[in-house]
Image (cartoon, rainbow, N blue to C red; front, side, top):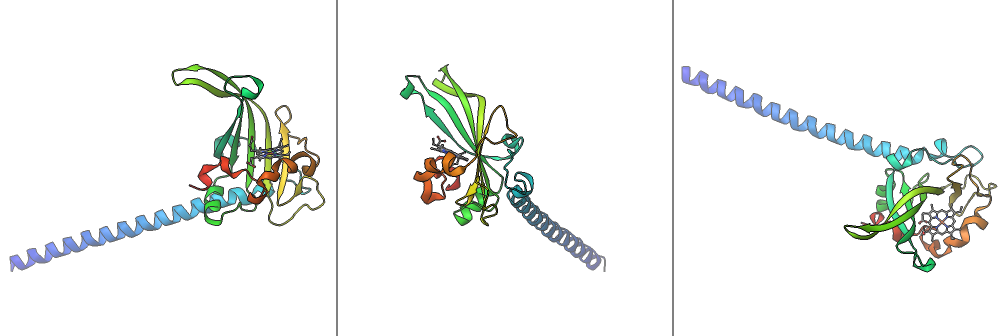
Length: 209
Ligand code: HEC
């Protein structure tokens, strides 16, 4: 009789432990899935909200604040100084976009509505370091901004067209763009990248990795 009771108790214990294990695994999976979903939605909201936060109702583009800390760094262009007889780089162009844009691009092969590309211009200095002759970025000189527009929202605004909003901000006035007409101020220089939706994709390896 006692042995049967012991066996029964053992079975109950094993049953309880199994139930706990299953509950834990299910709960963990649910929390992880919800977390991933929320993360994805938040990332999408970041580029979807561009037209609420960084573009006004007439299509004037505002430079996002503090993007260097919370956006994704896409890549850097170093401007060679040898053409002007200088050693190393004479400037860096660092390009950023919102979180979520890289994932969207990898999936769809293009930029989502509201995606922004910001190219920050930085001066540079070159010196001898333990790694060799090295250039590093110094002060900010300005920002080139593009905003992806799938809808054709601001047809009469000369900052908008060819699927993008276009604006340049000088470092001394980040509030107001100096661009008046993207066709004159921007487009001709981006013609070599026309096939890639006007973007110089070769500088952003993580869009394709
Ligand atoms: C002198 C030619 C030139 C002009 C003018 C120009 N761009 Fe560009 N832009 C480039 C080149 C070349 C790159 C990539 C290499 C680099 O930055 O050196 C680039 C890169 C960019 C990038 C990063 C995304 C990309 O395409 O790789 C943005 C954003 C950008 N330009 C916006 C603008 C805007 C907005 C204007 C007009 C206000 C403008 N550009 C005018 C030549 C130009």
